Image 1 (cartoon, rainbow, N blue to C red):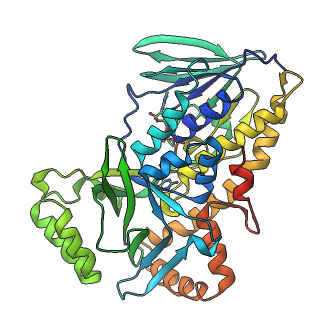
Image 2: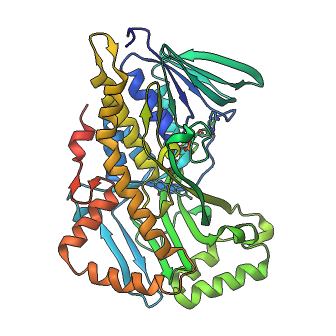
Image 3: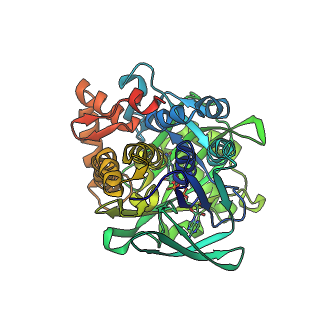
Length: 423
Ligand SMILES: Cc1cc2nc3c(=O)[nH]c(=O)nc-3n(C[C@H](O)[C@H](O)[C@H](O)COP(=O)(O)OP(=O)(O)OC[C@H]3O[C@@H](n4cnc5c(N)ncnc54)[C@H](O)[C@@H]3O)c2cc1C
Protein backbone atom coordinates (compact mmCIF):
# COMPACT_ATOMS: atom_id res chain seq x y z
CA UNK A 1 0.00 0.00 0.00
CA UNK A 2 1.31 3.46 -0.82
CA UNK A 3 0.02 6.98 -0.56
CA UNK A 4 -1.68 8.55 -3.58
CA UNK A 5 -1.52 12.20 -4.60
CA UNK A 6 2.00 11.79 -5.90
CA UNK A 7 1.71 8.38 -7.52
CA UNK A 8 4.38 7.93 -10.18
CA UNK A 9 3.90 5.33 -12.91
CA UNK A 10 6.29 4.56 -15.77
CA UNK A 11 4.95 3.37 -19.10
CA UNK A 12 7.49 1.73 -21.40
CA UNK A 13 6.53 2.19 -25.06
CA UNK A 14 4.45 4.94 -26.67
CA UNK A 15 2.50 2.72 -29.08
CA UNK A 16 -1.28 2.29 -29.07
CA UNK A 17 -1.33 0.62 -25.64
CA UNK A 18 1.14 3.02 -23.97
CA UNK A 19 -0.42 6.25 -25.25
CA UNK A 20 -3.99 5.22 -24.36
CA UNK A 21 -2.87 4.12 -20.88
CA UNK A 22 -1.03 7.40 -20.29
CA UNK A 23 -4.25 9.33 -20.98
CA UNK A 24 -6.40 7.13 -18.74
CA UNK A 25 -3.98 7.26 -15.79
CA UNK A 26 -3.31 11.01 -16.16
CA UNK A 27 -7.09 11.47 -15.97
CA UNK A 28 -6.80 9.92 -12.49
CA UNK A 29 -4.10 12.43 -11.45
CA UNK A 30 -1.29 9.90 -11.68
CA UNK A 31 2.10 11.20 -12.80
CA UNK A 32 3.25 9.31 -15.88
CA UNK A 33 6.72 9.04 -17.38
CA UNK A 34 6.34 7.73 -20.89
CA UNK A 35 9.55 6.10 -22.22
CA UNK A 36 9.80 5.61 -25.99
CA UNK A 37 12.74 4.15 -27.87
CA UNK A 38 12.14 6.16 -31.05
CA UNK A 39 13.50 9.71 -31.24
CA UNK A 40 10.19 11.05 -32.53
CA UNK A 41 6.67 9.67 -32.71
CA UNK A 42 6.62 9.16 -36.47
CA UNK A 43 5.01 5.78 -36.85
CA UNK A 44 5.53 4.36 -40.28
CA UNK A 45 2.94 1.74 -40.85
CA UNK A 46 0.08 0.40 -42.81
CA UNK A 47 -3.53 1.05 -42.10
CA UNK A 48 -5.22 -1.00 -39.47
CA UNK A 49 -8.81 -1.67 -38.64
CA UNK A 50 -10.30 -0.34 -35.42
CA UNK A 51 -13.17 -2.57 -34.39
CA UNK A 52 -16.22 -1.47 -32.34
CA UNK A 53 -14.31 -2.61 -29.20
CA UNK A 54 -11.43 -0.21 -29.94
CA UNK A 55 -13.87 2.54 -30.97
CA UNK A 56 -15.69 2.14 -27.65
CA UNK A 57 -12.36 2.86 -25.92
CA UNK A 58 -11.89 5.86 -28.24
CA UNK A 59 -15.32 7.14 -27.18
CA UNK A 60 -14.35 6.63 -23.52
CA UNK A 61 -11.12 8.60 -24.18
CA UNK A 62 -13.09 11.31 -25.99
CA UNK A 63 -11.05 11.00 -29.20
CA UNK A 64 -13.58 9.20 -31.40
CA UNK A 65 -14.71 12.28 -33.37
CA UNK A 66 -11.10 13.22 -34.21
CA UNK A 67 -10.38 9.67 -35.39
CA UNK A 68 -13.52 9.49 -37.54
CA UNK A 69 -12.58 12.78 -39.30
CA UNK A 70 -9.41 11.25 -40.74
CA UNK A 71 -10.26 7.53 -40.74
CA UNK A 72 -12.44 5.57 -43.16
CA UNK A 73 -15.72 4.03 -42.01
CA UNK A 74 -15.80 0.29 -42.74
CA UNK A 75 -19.15 -1.51 -42.68
CA UNK A 76 -17.94 -5.05 -43.22
CA UNK A 77 -15.43 -7.62 -44.35
CA UNK A 78 -15.84 -9.62 -47.57
CA UNK A 79 -13.47 -12.46 -48.43
CA UNK A 80 -13.54 -13.93 -51.95
CA UNK A 81 -12.30 -17.19 -53.37
CA UNK A 82 -10.96 -17.44 -56.96
CA UNK A 83 -14.38 -18.77 -58.04
CA UNK A 84 -15.86 -15.40 -57.05
CA UNK A 85 -17.89 -16.94 -54.22
CA UNK A 86 -17.70 -15.25 -50.83
CA UNK A 87 -15.95 -17.21 -48.12
CA UNK A 88 -16.39 -14.40 -45.57
CA UNK A 89 -19.32 -12.01 -45.64
CA UNK A 90 -19.35 -10.39 -42.23
CA UNK A 91 -20.95 -7.02 -41.63
CA UNK A 92 -20.92 -5.09 -38.36
CA UNK A 93 -24.69 -4.50 -38.57
CA UNK A 94 -25.10 -8.27 -38.05
CA UNK A 95 -23.68 -7.74 -34.54
CA UNK A 96 -25.47 -4.45 -33.81
CA UNK A 97 -27.24 -1.94 -36.10
CA UNK A 98 -25.01 0.94 -34.88
CA UNK A 99 -21.67 -0.84 -35.16
CA UNK A 100 -18.98 0.02 -37.70
CA UNK A 101 -15.21 -0.33 -38.03
CA UNK A 102 -12.69 2.41 -38.80
CA UNK A 103 -9.80 1.94 -41.20
CA UNK A 104 -7.06 4.20 -39.90
CA UNK A 105 -3.45 4.95 -40.79
CA UNK A 106 -1.04 4.17 -37.95
CA UNK A 107 0.22 7.79 -38.07
CA UNK A 108 -3.34 9.05 -37.58
CA UNK A 109 -4.00 6.67 -34.70
CA UNK A 110 -0.84 7.87 -33.01
CA UNK A 111 -1.60 11.55 -33.77
CA UNK A 112 -5.06 11.34 -32.20
CA UNK A 113 -3.78 9.66 -29.01
CA UNK A 114 -0.69 11.89 -28.76
CA UNK A 115 -2.83 15.06 -29.04
CA UNK A 116 -4.96 13.85 -26.15
CA UNK A 117 -1.84 13.09 -24.08
CA UNK A 118 -0.63 16.67 -24.68
CA UNK A 119 -3.72 17.90 -22.78
CA UNK A 120 -2.02 16.71 -19.57
CA UNK A 121 1.39 18.47 -19.69
CA UNK A 122 1.72 18.59 -15.89
CA UNK A 123 1.07 14.89 -15.51
CA UNK A 124 2.75 13.26 -18.53
CA UNK A 125 6.53 13.51 -18.90
CA UNK A 126 7.89 12.35 -22.27
CA UNK A 127 11.23 10.58 -22.46
CA UNK A 128 11.98 10.00 -26.13
CA UNK A 129 15.08 8.21 -27.42
CA UNK A 130 14.81 6.13 -24.25
CA UNK A 131 15.75 2.48 -24.42
CA UNK A 132 14.65 0.77 -21.22
CA UNK A 133 16.56 -2.45 -20.66
CA UNK A 134 15.80 -3.71 -17.17
CA UNK A 135 13.35 -3.47 -14.27
CA UNK A 136 14.01 -4.29 -10.63
CA UNK A 137 11.18 -4.54 -8.13
CA UNK A 138 11.49 -4.21 -4.36
CA UNK A 139 8.90 -3.85 -1.60
CA UNK A 140 8.49 -0.07 -1.85
CA UNK A 141 9.35 0.73 -5.46
CA UNK A 142 10.29 -0.51 -8.89
CA UNK A 143 13.44 0.76 -10.62
CA UNK A 144 13.77 1.31 -14.33
CA UNK A 145 17.25 1.03 -15.95
CA UNK A 146 18.21 2.01 -19.46
CA UNK A 147 19.64 4.77 -21.64
CA UNK A 148 17.99 8.10 -22.41
CA UNK A 149 19.60 10.11 -25.23
CA UNK A 150 22.57 7.78 -25.02
CA UNK A 151 23.14 8.44 -21.29
CA UNK A 152 22.70 5.77 -18.63
CA UNK A 153 19.43 6.26 -16.80
CA UNK A 154 17.95 4.89 -13.57
CA UNK A 155 14.81 5.96 -11.75
CA UNK A 156 12.32 4.60 -9.20
CA UNK A 157 8.55 4.46 -9.73
CA UNK A 158 5.51 3.15 -7.89
CA UNK A 159 4.50 0.92 -10.77
CA UNK A 160 5.73 0.09 -14.30
CA UNK A 161 3.47 -0.72 -17.24
CA UNK A 162 5.36 -2.62 -19.94
CA UNK A 163 3.83 -1.71 -23.32
CA UNK A 164 6.82 -2.10 -25.60
CA UNK A 165 5.40 -4.41 -28.23
CA UNK A 166 5.69 -8.00 -29.42
CA UNK A 167 9.49 -8.25 -29.07
CA UNK A 168 9.53 -7.03 -25.46
CA UNK A 169 12.49 -8.16 -23.37
CA UNK A 170 10.95 -6.59 -20.27
CA UNK A 171 8.02 -8.93 -19.68
CA UNK A 172 8.87 -11.17 -16.70
CA UNK A 173 10.27 -14.39 -18.19
CA UNK A 174 8.47 -16.63 -15.69
CA UNK A 175 5.06 -15.37 -16.91
CA UNK A 176 5.77 -16.25 -20.56
CA UNK A 177 4.26 -19.52 -21.79
CA UNK A 178 4.81 -19.01 -25.53
CA UNK A 179 7.05 -16.52 -27.34
CA UNK A 180 7.78 -17.47 -30.92
CA UNK A 181 7.95 -15.97 -34.41
CA UNK A 182 5.27 -16.90 -36.96
CA UNK A 183 6.59 -18.60 -40.08
CA UNK A 184 4.40 -16.28 -42.22
CA UNK A 185 4.32 -12.50 -42.52
CA UNK A 186 3.10 -9.95 -45.05
CA UNK A 187 4.25 -7.29 -47.47
CA UNK A 188 2.20 -4.14 -47.40
CA UNK A 189 2.05 -0.80 -49.13
CA UNK A 190 -0.13 2.31 -49.11
CA UNK A 191 -1.76 3.59 -52.32
CA UNK A 192 -4.40 6.22 -53.21
CA UNK A 193 -7.88 5.16 -52.14
CA UNK A 194 -9.34 2.24 -54.09
CA UNK A 195 -12.59 3.42 -55.68
CA UNK A 196 -12.99 0.46 -58.06
CA UNK A 197 -14.81 -1.49 -55.32
CA UNK A 198 -17.14 -0.45 -52.48
CA UNK A 199 -15.06 2.02 -50.40
CA UNK A 200 -16.55 0.93 -47.06
CA UNK A 201 -15.55 -2.73 -47.27
CA UNK A 202 -12.34 -4.46 -46.20
CA UNK A 203 -11.73 -6.89 -49.07
CA UNK A 204 -9.74 -10.05 -48.69
CA UNK A 205 -8.89 -12.61 -51.38
CA UNK A 206 -7.85 -16.18 -50.63
CA UNK A 207 -6.69 -19.18 -52.62
CA UNK A 208 -6.12 -22.29 -50.50
CA UNK A 209 -3.88 -21.46 -47.54
CA UNK A 210 -1.08 -20.09 -49.73
CA UNK A 211 -2.50 -16.86 -51.16
CA UNK A 212 -4.08 -14.09 -49.15
CA UNK A 213 -4.41 -10.45 -50.14
CA UNK A 214 -6.25 -7.58 -48.45
CA UNK A 215 -7.39 -4.10 -49.46
CA UNK A 216 -8.20 -1.94 -46.44
CA UNK A 217 -9.76 1.56 -46.58
CA UNK A 218 -7.24 3.62 -44.58
CA UNK A 219 -8.50 7.22 -44.59
CA UNK A 220 -5.93 10.03 -44.55
CA UNK A 221 -2.85 11.08 -42.58
CA UNK A 222 -2.94 14.36 -40.56
CA UNK A 223 -0.37 16.04 -42.84
CA UNK A 224 -2.44 15.39 -46.02
CA UNK A 225 -6.08 15.19 -44.93
CA UNK A 226 -7.44 15.50 -48.49
CA UNK A 227 -5.60 12.45 -49.86
CA UNK A 228 -7.61 9.34 -48.97
CA UNK A 229 -5.65 6.10 -48.96
CA UNK A 230 -5.95 2.31 -49.08
CA UNK A 231 -3.53 -0.30 -47.71
CA UNK A 232 -2.68 -3.44 -49.66
CA UNK A 233 -1.50 -6.60 -47.84
CA UNK A 234 0.07 -9.64 -49.49
CA UNK A 235 0.80 -12.62 -47.28
CA UNK A 236 4.07 -14.62 -47.65
CA UNK A 237 6.29 -17.05 -45.73
CA UNK A 238 8.86 -14.92 -43.88
CA UNK A 239 11.80 -16.30 -45.91
CA UNK A 240 10.21 -14.87 -49.09
CA UNK A 241 9.51 -11.35 -47.74
CA UNK A 242 12.90 -9.98 -48.80
CA UNK A 243 12.64 -11.04 -52.44
CA UNK A 244 9.07 -9.89 -53.19
CA UNK A 245 8.60 -7.80 -56.40
CA UNK A 246 12.26 -6.97 -56.98
CA UNK A 247 12.08 -6.77 -60.78
CA UNK A 248 9.63 -5.71 -63.50
CA UNK A 249 9.31 -9.35 -64.48
CA UNK A 250 8.37 -10.30 -60.92
CA UNK A 251 5.76 -7.56 -60.92
CA UNK A 252 4.13 -8.77 -64.16
CA UNK A 253 4.19 -12.40 -62.99
CA UNK A 254 2.56 -11.38 -59.72
CA UNK A 255 -0.14 -9.38 -61.54
CA UNK A 256 -0.74 -12.40 -63.83
CA UNK A 257 -1.25 -14.64 -60.80
CA UNK A 258 -3.75 -12.18 -59.32
CA UNK A 259 -5.48 -11.73 -62.70
CA UNK A 260 -5.99 -15.49 -63.13
CA UNK A 261 -8.00 -15.44 -59.93
CA UNK A 262 -9.46 -11.93 -59.52
CA UNK A 263 -9.15 -10.06 -62.78
CA UNK A 264 -10.77 -6.70 -61.73
CA UNK A 265 -8.38 -6.53 -58.76
CA UNK A 266 -5.38 -7.07 -61.03
CA UNK A 267 -6.64 -4.27 -63.33
CA UNK A 268 -6.69 -1.89 -60.36
CA UNK A 269 -3.31 -3.06 -59.04
CA UNK A 270 -1.83 -2.50 -62.52
CA UNK A 271 -2.66 1.21 -62.11
CA UNK A 272 -1.45 1.70 -58.53
CA UNK A 273 1.54 -0.60 -58.14
CA UNK A 274 4.61 1.08 -59.60
CA UNK A 275 7.47 -0.70 -61.35
CA UNK A 276 10.11 -1.86 -58.86
CA UNK A 277 12.69 0.70 -60.03
CA UNK A 278 10.28 3.49 -59.07
CA UNK A 279 10.91 2.34 -55.51
CA UNK A 280 7.33 2.04 -54.34
CA UNK A 281 7.65 1.21 -50.68
CA UNK A 282 6.61 -2.35 -49.92
CA UNK A 283 7.39 -2.94 -46.26
CA UNK A 284 7.60 -6.25 -44.43
CA UNK A 285 5.60 -7.25 -41.39
CA UNK A 286 6.63 -10.17 -39.19
CA UNK A 287 4.42 -11.49 -36.44
CA UNK A 288 4.96 -13.14 -33.09
CA UNK A 289 2.86 -15.37 -30.96
CA UNK A 290 3.08 -14.47 -27.25
CA UNK A 291 1.03 -16.19 -24.54
CA UNK A 292 1.43 -15.32 -20.85
CA UNK A 293 0.12 -16.95 -17.69
CA UNK A 294 -0.67 -13.54 -16.15
CA UNK A 295 -0.52 -9.87 -17.10
CA UNK A 296 0.32 -8.21 -13.82
CA UNK A 297 1.59 -8.77 -10.31
CA UNK A 298 3.08 -6.51 -7.67
CA UNK A 299 4.31 -3.32 -9.30
CA UNK A 300 4.57 -4.64 -12.89
CA UNK A 301 1.90 -4.91 -15.56
CA UNK A 302 2.28 -6.01 -19.18
CA UNK A 303 -0.20 -4.82 -21.83
CA UNK A 304 -0.72 -4.71 -25.61
CA UNK A 305 1.40 -6.81 -27.96
CA UNK A 306 3.99 -7.27 -25.20
CA UNK A 307 1.37 -9.32 -23.35
CA UNK A 308 -0.44 -11.14 -26.16
CA UNK A 309 1.03 -10.61 -29.64
CA UNK A 310 -0.71 -12.67 -32.31
CA UNK A 311 -1.06 -12.79 -36.08
CA UNK A 312 -3.20 -9.94 -37.44
CA UNK A 313 -5.58 -12.46 -39.06
CA UNK A 314 -8.48 -11.42 -36.80
CA UNK A 315 -7.61 -7.68 -36.93
CA UNK A 316 -7.72 -7.38 -33.13
CA UNK A 317 -4.20 -6.38 -31.96
CA UNK A 318 -4.65 -2.62 -31.65
CA UNK A 319 -8.16 -3.12 -30.31
CA UNK A 320 -6.92 -5.49 -27.63
CA UNK A 321 -4.22 -2.96 -26.75
CA UNK A 322 -6.93 -0.30 -26.31
CA UNK A 323 -9.10 -2.63 -24.23
CA UNK A 324 -6.06 -3.36 -22.03
CA UNK A 325 -5.58 0.38 -21.46
CA UNK A 326 -9.27 0.79 -20.63
CA UNK A 327 -9.23 -2.19 -18.22
CA UNK A 328 -6.11 -0.88 -16.51
CA UNK A 329 -7.80 2.49 -16.04
CA UNK A 330 -10.81 0.74 -14.47
CA UNK A 331 -8.63 -1.48 -12.28
CA UNK A 332 -6.51 1.39 -10.96
CA UNK A 333 -9.64 3.37 -10.14
CA UNK A 334 -11.05 0.35 -8.31
CA UNK A 335 -7.84 -0.31 -6.36
CA UNK A 336 -7.38 3.29 -5.19
CA UNK A 337 -9.43 3.25 -2.02
CA UNK A 338 -8.69 5.33 1.05
CA UNK A 339 -5.86 7.19 -0.66
CA UNK A 340 -3.86 4.05 -1.34
CA UNK A 341 -3.29 1.54 -4.15
CA UNK A 342 -3.95 -2.09 -3.41
CA UNK A 343 -1.85 -3.84 -6.08
CA UNK A 344 -3.25 -7.38 -5.59
CA UNK A 345 -6.74 -5.86 -6.02
CA UNK A 346 -5.59 -3.91 -9.07
CA UNK A 347 -4.39 -7.04 -10.90
CA UNK A 348 -7.38 -9.08 -9.75
CA UNK A 349 -9.75 -6.57 -11.36
CA UNK A 350 -7.53 -6.27 -14.44
CA UNK A 351 -7.49 -10.03 -14.98
CA UNK A 352 -11.26 -10.19 -14.50
CA UNK A 353 -11.64 -7.72 -17.37
CA UNK A 354 -9.00 -9.08 -19.71
CA UNK A 355 -7.99 -12.69 -19.12
CA UNK A 356 -10.83 -14.64 -20.68
CA UNK A 357 -11.35 -12.26 -23.61
CA UNK A 358 -7.64 -12.35 -24.46
CA UNK A 359 -7.57 -16.15 -24.14
CA UNK A 360 -10.58 -16.40 -26.48
CA UNK A 361 -9.00 -14.29 -29.25
CA UNK A 362 -5.60 -15.96 -28.90
CA UNK A 363 -7.21 -19.39 -29.14
CA UNK A 364 -9.17 -18.37 -32.24
CA UNK A 365 -6.15 -16.76 -33.84
CA UNK A 366 -4.03 -19.90 -33.36
CA UNK A 367 -6.89 -22.04 -34.70
CA UNK A 368 -7.67 -19.93 -37.77
CA UNK A 369 -4.32 -18.52 -38.91
CA UNK A 370 -3.03 -21.84 -40.35
CA UNK A 371 -6.20 -22.07 -42.43
CA UNK A 372 -5.08 -18.90 -44.25
CA UNK A 373 -1.30 -19.04 -44.00
CA UNK A 374 0.31 -22.46 -44.05
CA UNK A 375 1.76 -25.22 -46.21
CA UNK A 376 -0.89 -27.76 -45.08
CA UNK A 377 -2.49 -29.18 -48.25
CA UNK A 378 -5.83 -29.71 -46.50
CA UNK A 379 -6.15 -26.33 -44.71
CA UNK A 380 -7.73 -24.21 -47.47
CA UNK A 381 -10.22 -26.90 -48.55
CA UNK A 382 -11.27 -27.58 -44.97
CA UNK A 383 -11.77 -23.84 -44.39
CA UNK A 384 -13.75 -23.30 -47.61
CA UNK A 385 -16.11 -26.15 -46.72
CA UNK A 386 -16.75 -25.26 -43.06
CA UNK A 387 -17.00 -21.47 -43.52
CA UNK A 388 -19.52 -21.59 -46.36
CA UNK A 389 -21.64 -23.93 -44.23
CA UNK A 390 -21.33 -21.69 -41.14
CA UNK A 391 -22.35 -18.51 -42.94
CA UNK A 392 -25.69 -20.13 -43.85
CA UNK A 393 -26.66 -20.39 -40.16
CA UNK A 394 -27.86 -17.07 -38.69
CA UNK A 395 -26.52 -17.87 -35.17
CA UNK A 396 -22.97 -18.35 -36.48
CA UNK A 397 -23.24 -15.32 -38.77
CA UNK A 398 -24.09 -13.14 -35.79
CA UNK A 399 -21.43 -14.75 -33.57
CA UNK A 400 -18.86 -14.16 -36.31
CA UNK A 401 -19.81 -10.47 -36.53
CA UNK A 402 -19.57 -10.08 -32.72
CA UNK A 403 -16.20 -11.84 -32.76
CA UNK A 404 -14.89 -9.51 -35.49
CA UNK A 405 -16.24 -6.55 -33.45
CA UNK A 406 -13.73 -7.47 -30.74
CA UNK A 407 -16.31 -7.68 -27.97
CA UNK A 408 -16.24 -11.39 -27.14
CA UNK A 409 -15.18 -12.11 -23.58
CA UNK A 410 -15.39 -15.89 -23.95
CA UNK A 411 -16.97 -18.54 -26.14
CA UNK A 412 -20.50 -17.71 -24.93
CA UNK A 413 -20.14 -14.22 -23.47
CA UNK A 414 -19.52 -10.69 -24.67
CA UNK A 415 -18.71 -7.19 -23.41
CA UNK A 416 -21.14 -4.35 -23.97
CA UNK A 417 -20.01 -1.39 -26.12
CA UNK A 418 -21.82 1.08 -23.80
CA UNK A 419 -20.07 -0.25 -20.68
CA UNK A 420 -16.67 0.48 -22.22
CA UNK A 421 -17.61 3.78 -23.89
CA UNK A 422 -19.19 5.42 -20.84
CA UNK A 423 -17.05 7.99 -19.05
C1 LIG B 1 0.79 -5.61 -40.98
C2 LIG B 1 0.01 -5.50 -39.73
C3 LIG B 1 -1.36 -5.26 -39.80
C4 LIG B 1 -2.11 -5.13 -38.64
N1 LIG B 1 -3.45 -4.90 -38.74
C5 LIG B 1 -4.19 -4.74 -37.63
C6 LIG B 1 -5.59 -4.43 -37.71
O1 LIG B 1 -6.17 -4.32 -38.79
N2 LIG B 1 -6.27 -4.25 -36.55
C7 LIG B 1 -5.66 -4.34 -35.34
O2 LIG B 1 -6.32 -4.15 -34.31
N3 LIG B 1 -4.34 -4.63 -35.22
C8 LIG B 1 -3.59 -4.84 -36.33
N4 LIG B 1 -2.26 -5.11 -36.22
C9 LIG B 1 -1.67 -5.26 -34.86
C10 LIG B 1 -1.40 -3.92 -34.18
O3 LIG B 1 -0.61 -3.09 -35.00
C11 LIG B 1 -0.69 -4.16 -32.86
O4 LIG B 1 -1.37 -5.17 -32.14
C12 LIG B 1 -0.68 -2.89 -31.99
O5 LIG B 1 -0.01 -1.87 -32.67
C13 LIG B 1 0.02 -3.16 -30.66
O6 LIG B 1 0.24 -1.96 -29.97
P1 LIG B 1 1.28 -1.88 -28.76
O7 LIG B 1 1.17 -0.50 -28.23
O8 LIG B 1 1.09 -3.02 -27.85
O9 LIG B 1 2.70 -2.10 -29.42
P2 LIG B 1 3.54 -1.23 -30.52
O10 LIG B 1 2.59 -0.46 -31.39
O11 LIG B 1 4.46 -2.19 -31.12
O12 LIG B 1 4.30 -0.16 -29.60
C14 LIG B 1 5.41 -0.50 -28.82
C15 LIG B 1 6.28 0.74 -28.64
O13 LIG B 1 7.30 0.47 -27.69
C16 LIG B 1 8.53 1.04 -28.13
N5 LIG B 1 9.62 0.27 -27.50
C17 LIG B 1 10.04 -0.97 -27.79
N6 LIG B 1 11.02 -1.37 -26.97
C18 LIG B 1 11.25 -0.33 -26.13
C19 LIG B 1 12.16 -0.13 -25.05
N7 LIG B 1 13.02 -1.09 -24.66
N8 LIG B 1 12.15 1.06 -24.39
C20 LIG B 1 11.28 2.04 -24.76
N9 LIG B 1 10.39 1.90 -25.79
C21 LIG B 1 10.37 0.73 -26.46
C22 LIG B 1 8.46 0.89 -29.65
O14 LIG B 1 9.34 1.81 -30.29
C23 LIG B 1 6.98 1.18 -29.92
O15 LIG B 1 6.73 2.56 -30.14
C24 LIG B 1 -1.49 -5.26 -37.36
C25 LIG B 1 -0.11 -5.49 -37.28
C26 LIG B 1 0.64 -5.62 -38.45
C27 LIG B 1 2.13 -5.85 -38.32
